[in-house]
Length: 145
Image (tube, rainbow, N blue to C red; front, side):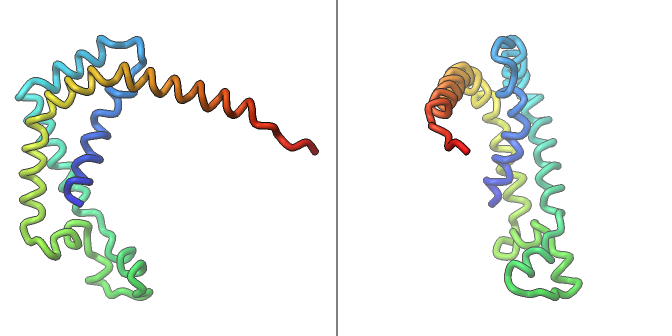
């Protein structure tokens, strides 16, 4: 679960670089350069750490109880957070998650450089898939009224 939270947050931050206009290579290059800077990577790690902490404080106790068949959970059960549930079997869950965020962000620069190389090919592939779907959709005979 910890890795999933970190991956979701990292992708949400990287998404604007991936979604950038195909012709706007300079903006992508700028983002890659910035994320390659160790100082910025540390700042990103701090930001991601704060976001993970905030996500850990989301109350989901009532939902979890209902999903487990308890239609009327008590106050304590209803107040449980993602962090409470995730750390139930691992009392060091938050500390380990913070450490993983720090470790992950130190590799952000290398990952961004790899993404910068992969983005043009991914965009070409997405364009081809879009054209293929359009061609297939136009070839499907529609029922007549």
